[in-house]
Image 1 (tube, rainbow, N blue to C red):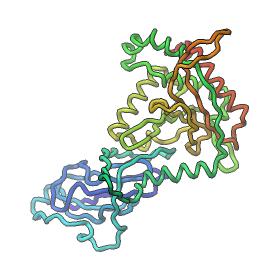
Image 2: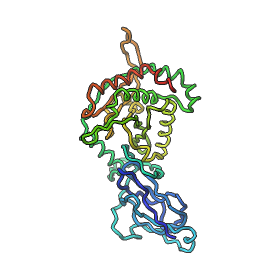
Image 3: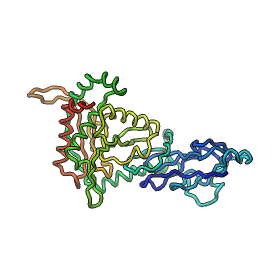
Image 4: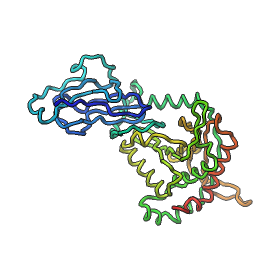
Length: 368
């Protein structure tokens, strides 16, 4: 029996995707759930698997075609019937089906992050490919991938639609450093993961969001949407670019749970195994340019979120403390917020609250 290969169900905010190079050609044997082609969407790159074991007998669309959820892209004859079907020589998809198709384009894999609605069924995510190197003295041109185009579109939209303003502060990281040194061995034994900086920032942000819930809210038309949970987007670098998986209900998590979740996000980001569900529904984001050496920056909002916290490099600097000049490990903090919704007073006090929690971090570990 001929079984159709269909595009998997996507989220409501992902209308279509672009087919990347076919991994299999007509006449080749395929196994059930084996990846036949990768689908590049605005959010992630997904695999389209074979629905049954057998022989691939039809490719309806070529690389570069734009397809929608549930669209038929190929066909497989199941194993029992495939034995009687002579294998055809590999052909291009365009030669198999002369129907009009979107012109094939060369694409590179990149990534994007934004809030999306989780689909009912989430397919596996495809592995990344290395970017091509341009030889010295030459130039080359290629279309942006759908993901990179979406990143550009959202960044420009954020600049045009939100009244973005950034407020700054600095935090003395010595108390956090001392606490990490004191408990790092015990923490790793108990939780199976290292005690990093991010759990302190997540807990401090959750405390501050509890006091200033407007920072966790969003604008929807003429309405303000108030979120009861702190679903924090944690910016993570991956081989395909920056991704922002969501740490859900972060206000309920212990430091151990936070560190394990972030370690898991990092591992799956490196292996391109994050799903659409992982990237959906954040209410506030944290980004850490300090891991790349950034001393100060103004992060850009991730709509529809209304605020984002930027962490930076820890640098020893002289500061005044109890009337004395001392050297302390200092970090600049930046909070970018949508001034249409959040007043400057609330933004500044939110950041001061984060700073205060980090400079007295014992309370952040009480339940951990």
